Image (cartoon, one colour):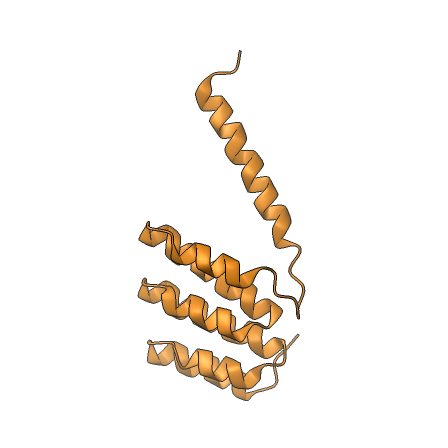
Length: 129
């Protein structure tokens, strides 16, 4: 017979497998249910979990070229270092998808001057694939 903690572990592992498999569905130019994901992420009450969820969402949105959801997700991140790193990463992803002007706007959200200048420098140059 399977003890309850083992059953819970198996259920969690199954859920993680399903969630990880869904990540490969991201295709540039698709919406990937981003608005619904943003709505769900905004309702998370645990600040750390909310921040990490919003960071993942921002990068997913930037990957598919959805500037609005990427920016809204970054704005919702409370942890300063995660906010800035997510804005940095998302700006690079947006630029690689041809949205360089939007990437510059997102880069301006970075609070740390050195980090902001670094990503703006990268956005001013041709990006490597």
